[in-house]
Length: 257
Ligand code: CO8
Image (tube, rainbow, N blue to C red; front, side, top):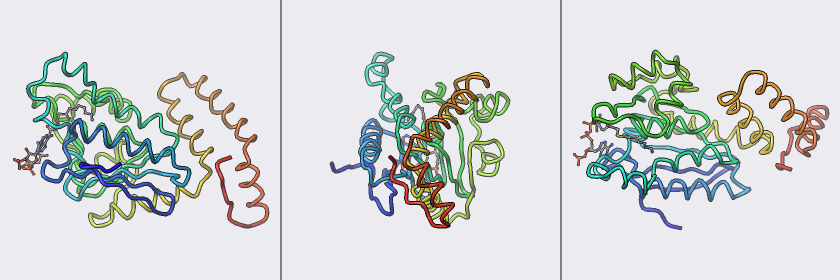
């Protein structure tokens, strides 16, 4: 399938999706969201792709939902299209997905980045939920995922004032995993993806499920989930391969079986 609002490429086990609406700072139109979800779903089905990178441009990861395309919408229009629910699909992927953020990650853009497994950010990155300035509130996890990541005080600050967080503040608050120099964000994101792509796909999938379970369960349930998941991995060829390779002092060759 050919896309108009994103570009895709793949190399060295990494599927790369780049948001590509530069004139509107990668504002997330319904078409862009549909193409994005289609592309990551295709990569998820491709056994050659072991990690997905989601990138924007130097100036903007994404400046939010496309304001022009929803300015005149009715509640029924919003319910019928339910476009913003699409980003929940990222959680269901079997393949890890890493956001590379430079410049603005605002509103739905911030929510989209937070829906990925981890965020690598340029020093220039700015995160925020400025929906309050438009007379609305975040609609794709900005009051929920953000609050779980940063706590009530900072979530209230961001959502009620609409102010932006610098990359350093975002890392200190737990939204961002790593910060890079302004010219290095793309390369660093792809390097992280290539590293992940060398690991066991089955162990990666189980690890993501276990970490995500920490947000949904009590500690006792989460520990139990983790222990059972740990036990189950001993049924995988990759566990045998990983441990044999260690003992034989060679690199493991994981197959995802
Ligand atoms: N939607 C549509 N167009 C946009 C958007 C947007 N979110 N953001 C920027 N643009 C357009 C501008 O209108 C402008 O177009 P034009 O050149 O035709 O005038 C162009 O992009 C460049 O923008 P600016 O001239 O404003 O650039 P600046 O560098 O001066 O400012 C800002 C950059 C600060 C990012 C500014 O553009 C801005 O404040 N943008 C809006 C940010 C915002 O309010 N985002 C929240 C949107 S609502 C939302 O996201 C709800 C989330 C629901 C869930 C979504 C799930 C996916």
